[in-house]
Amino acid sequence: MSGRERLCRPWKASGKNIVFLGPSGSGKSEIALNLAIRAAGEGKRPVHFFDMDQTKPLFRSRWARDAVERSGAVFHSGFEFLDSPVLPDGVAECLRNETIRCILDMGGSTAGARSLGQCVSGEDRNTRALYVVNVYRPFSDEENFLGDFSSITAAARLPFPCIVSNPNLGENTSIADVKEGHARLLEVLERNGLPLAFLAVRAPLLEAALEWADCPVEALDLRLGPGGEPLK
Picture 1 (cartoon, rainbow, N blue to C red):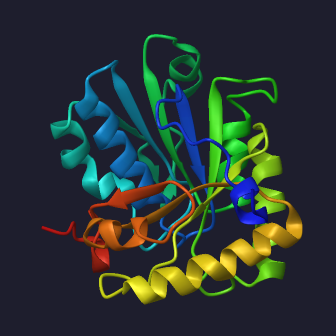
Picture 2: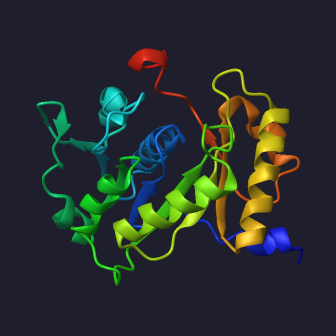
């Protein structure tokens, strides 16, 4: 088994609670939305999606609320008061409810992760954390990545997260861009002993990615557009 194969941890999208962490612009909202919609379509048990964003990002998962609700999932988001988003109601209760699944899109900051830390404990084995990295995002060099990763995951008070590789440059991302960016991230993970959960790619690139990727690959339908307009 190669070093890179050892990096990959078994990825099961059927976990009860999945929390997406990462800095703004990493793509965690797109990935969280896709996973929630897919899970709701499977119909195995009710899915609840939480927009936990406590910052002012360029893209917000709440802009795709209609798509989530059409899939059959329940959408939760807090109201905004004087431009400050409020934590949605019922987070802790839903995380503990064994009859439902929860997908949480956390804000891209330590403050946002800390709000989740108020709802969970370090002993919570039903909640899995996934930290999304886009190496093409500004300030995603190794030093900045490790600093953000350490502070955000500590604030969330969850068991050690796996990394999601999301190398993209938007709608015009090529498979060559994906391959190069993913390879760059794997080198960082190898040097620091960090585990990889899966590679995320736009749906049109899935077949090409499966030809060379040595880890699980998840396909994404982009649902958030420039300026906050959902993609049609």
